Every structure is written in structure tokens, then in C-alpha cells.
Length: 148
Length: 148
Image (cartoon, rainbow over all chains, first blue to last red; front, top):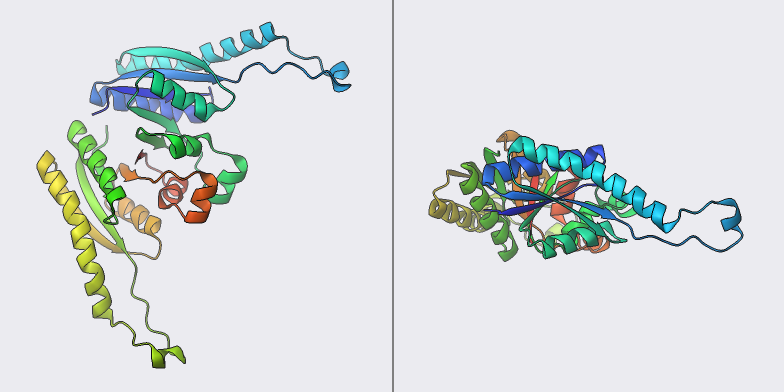
């Protein structure tokens, strides 16, 4: 049914649930998976008075930190994919909005499904605290497997 | 991966998308499906001034009018499942809120996944317009495949 499942991760424990479900689904359907980590683009430090007290992160340090976090998060997806015995590819995307990065990656990678976890705050809680999964759902054109 | 997929329907064209995806997934995984239609419970007519002017619907009339819609909606699930050669059962449940009925049915039938369509309004739109899928996602403990 699905041939290529996108599994976004932010390295959190919640994301692990989505990773496990995505890998299992891929195994059952004979699909391949792509693990995705979205990094926010570098924001240059302010040049106000605050800049004197807050040591900003240089662009190079920022990039290195992002790459390290991405490697760590994607290694989890890779190990789950390997355990499930499904083909795996890793992808890092730069986007200020995680959901936008996820959908862009799904489009460019021609994925036909997304597997993602959700903390499951509905209604007002979701509105205030923000749920990337809900935003992905709102904008996605492909099916999304939401795991709790 | 999933053994028993719940497919809620309200008979709309949108729900049809969820049905199609749910049945396809069930076929790919060798799972069975249960179609469910959530019906409003009969409200007894009010005994105040308005009752004089408004001829209330009898309990039988109420059920009759909904039963037809429910059977029609569930027939779609049955036809799709038969076409895909997937084992299928259908149920009608009575709840005020659709998501309550869906969750209760998933629990009662021990489904391990739900396939459902969503019109995909965002957080704010969903809050105003009411989005059963979002309500469901906020409370559901089993994975949900959301289709657009």
C-alpha cells in the first residue's frame, strides 16, 4: 500500500514511538523509510545591548550543534529500521517551521505516508502549546499515521 | 502489524476516502475491518410550551430516519471490503459526540488502529468548525491513520 514512509524525529522520547510504529508498518508493507530531522536555520545574534551579555552562537557552532543533534536523532531511526529490516535513508532539512520542513521533505522524497507521534493535546491545549503533528495533519496531502 | 482496523463513517464523500485507505491498509496487512456509524441518541421531547407547537419525533421515527442513513453509509464499507476481500463487520452506536462513539467502539471491538479522513483545517479552523478527527486524536490511545 505505502512504498515510502517518512519518519520525522526531533530526537525526543515521544518521537521514538512514531519511529517504532513507522518501522513496523514499513516492514509489514515492504516499504522503505526515510528518517528526517528538521533544523531551524541559523538566526544571527542581535546587536542590541543584550548582545553584550548573551554570548551568541556563531554560525559555524550552530551548524555543528545542529548536525550533531541530527546525527544522534537519525541514528535512532536507523537502528529501528535496521531492526525491522527495511531500507533506510537519512535526511536533514533546514526550515524554521518543523511541519513545513516535514512536508517539503515528503514532497521532495516522494514519500506516500508519514508516521509521527503526537502528545495528543487537543483543542485549546493544542492551540496554545502548539502541536507540530496537528500542523502536519492540517497541511499534508498524504496519509499520516499518528501514534500516541 | 495491525490486526483489526476500525473505520468510522458518517456517509460523507470525505469519509469515503478514509474507508478506501482503511480497507487498502487492511488488505495489505491481512487485517480485518469494522465499520462504525455513530448515531445521535434519541432525545425525549421537551415538555414545555414549545412542545405544544412542535410535534416531536417519536423514538421509532428517530431511529428510522437515522437507520437508513447509517445502513447506507456502512454499505460503502461493506462493498469496499468485499471488493478487497477483507473480513468486515459493521456496527451502529449511539453517542452524542461522534468521537466518543468511535473510541467506545474501538475499545469494545479491540481494534488496534483507526483509519479516518480529515478535511484538514488547522488548529484555529478546527477549533471553530469542529473537527472530529482532532478530537479523536487528542484522546485516542491507538494509532490513527489520517487521510486527506
